[in-house]
Length: 302
Image 1 (cartoon, rainbow, N blue to C red):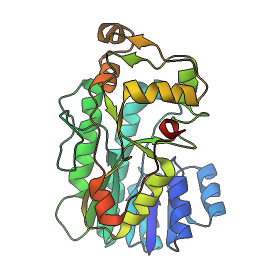
Image 2 (image 1 turned 45 degrees about the vertical axis):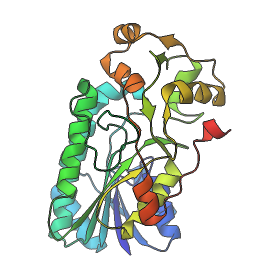
Image 3 (image 1 turned 90 degrees about the vertical axis):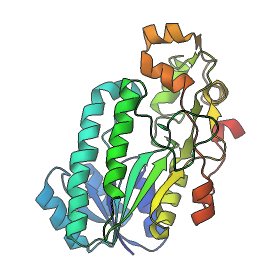
Image 4 (image 1 turned 180 degrees about the vertical axis):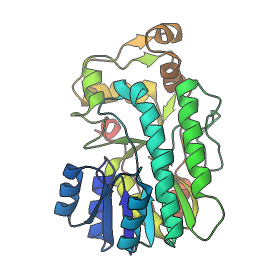
């Protein structure tokens, strides 16, 4: 299958490109940087060195690739989540405006199928694990709600009726090499400095996915029925469970504990939401439909 991957030099882009090539697909990777382009060429992919904001260049690259499927993994995330507030406007613009250029180019080029990165952790609060019928948390705290609205726009775009089939992949929090949540990642450093605390009872439930499992699921979704899929681990866990184990795993002291009031003063409303109100996602649909089998969360099974 001929596959065009945007965001090909990012955290998921690299293992995704490798897995697509391993499974015999003809892959074109899009990157706006010379370093990313060189890495893509070294991996065996064709290279489209294109700025996502340059709509004519995106369309030319896509037509040249003769892609049957487009995978949109466009993000503009910082190396450290502590910088996320400053990076969020640029990330939103890239996903919506740059991704919009990509989506329209795919429509014009007659691409058969479009896969979109979405979120499996900004789900509406509720009891138990949420399935794909659940909406996103647009009534949450300010930054969480803004992210939820961005993902709703992305999902509405890709799932609109038309000749191009749309799939929304709601990934959990990425962990693994090249991500924030890894011994060498930014959150490993934060844990060692005790900058990540358990807030209140730590009942916010986090859904995770190893970056390589996310890549495998994305390739499997190339032939899955159109729709939404949660790409998350089997056993989403509350912060009170996963954070102490993560700290131990990365060689950090036990995390601090803060009351909700203390956390609001020091870290803000969004941090309290993450710590106390996130809802886990069910992966049953992905398992049933295309055999998704994520590994256990590594620091809980260590």
